Image 1 (cartoon, rainbow, N blue to C red):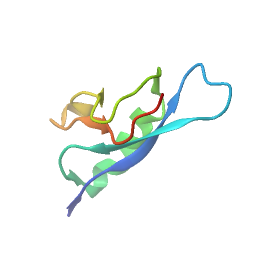
Image 2: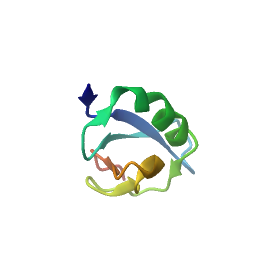
Image 3: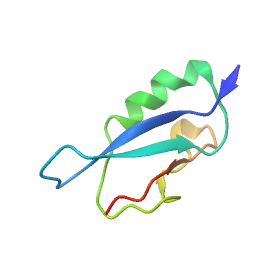
Length: 73
């Protein structure tokens, strides 16, 4: 079964805890959710982040990109 992967990515250099919501560009197999979450837990993004920015290109060689779904200034 496939579904769109959604998660949060942390912003670096932020005085408070700030996150950017992200999602996959294509449906992902459910058994890939945990490995993708592990990869994304190591990623920090710098601000500003615009909606639609690619956060992770070709995650785990699955041909799927992870993109931001909200603009964070």
